[in-house]
Amino acid sequence: MTGQIIHIEQSGFLTSLQDNGRNGFLQFGVSRGGAMDLNAAKYANILVGNDESEVVVEITQSPHRFHFLSDTVVAFTGGGLLPQLNNTTLPLSQPVFIPSNSVVEMKEQIPGFRLYMSVAGGLKADHFLNSNSTDLLIEAGGHYGRTLKKEDLLQIKTPQTSNQKNLLAVLQSGALLKLNTNKPDYQNQLIRVIKSIEWNYLNELSQNNFTAFQYKISTQSNRMGYRVKADLLTTKIPCEIISSAVTKGTIQLTPSGEMIVLMADAQTVGGYPRIAQVIQADLSLLAQKKPGEEIRFQLISIEEAEDLYLKEVEQLNSIRQTLNKFSPV
Image 1 (cartoon, rainbow, N blue to C red):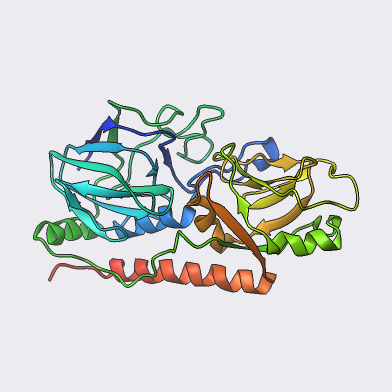
Image 2: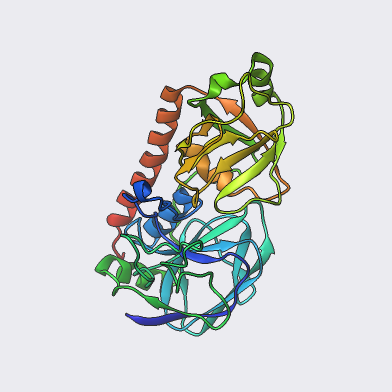
């Protein structure tokens, strides 16, 4: 099955096509980009039998309505919204069958901020520098380098594999395929971090305050970075450095007493002290936070961060192995 698969009848703000991002171009000032909640995006693809790097729809919490033009299998992961088909709520984190000429609406809000939708066979998108992710800053990749809007048509990328056809047939029969997975707690405020290069720029009191207080995410936050007020943090030396490498999850402290937590569309260098780094395993949780919500930081060791990352990888591999063995009964 190829061709047009989804007609967008309503699209909210900042909803776009994303994949795992573009690697190998940071030295040219090109951000990696890709899905904000990378774990949820990979998970959605695995659930429908795609390669984990296929294009997904990153749906930011606001009303949406998608008209499906053909029978297909989709998966919704992440949070923010509950998808509904004919006023029936569709489950998250499992593959579901969507009949031809059906309308899926997403308007009921739940914890989290970003919902991810994968389609068996993947979605066509514009290619730019080894990735199909939408880069809104330079208007490249994704769907004409922009957010999705009403009347857009999305197309299937490749024909379904034999396993995907088997999955479609079983789900069409009314069967459910439930997998034992740990659902993220998007109401959890705790974000784990490790010390970064300029951690020792903070005086002793500020180092203690860093993990002692809650921080509210500013409305001046986006896919490039989250801004949080940090009035009680001060440095022993001027709060500026020679522009140095930064990455997704880097926490910078500005002279105004504000912290910037860099996210998917972050720049490649920055001139503020890098006091901490959000661990890989908690970047997904942070991506599900929205302006006005509060977070707290917890310092952990590099060894603990590595263990948590490996557990995340193991869970995705376990789901992939289960679905690779899938066959109709």
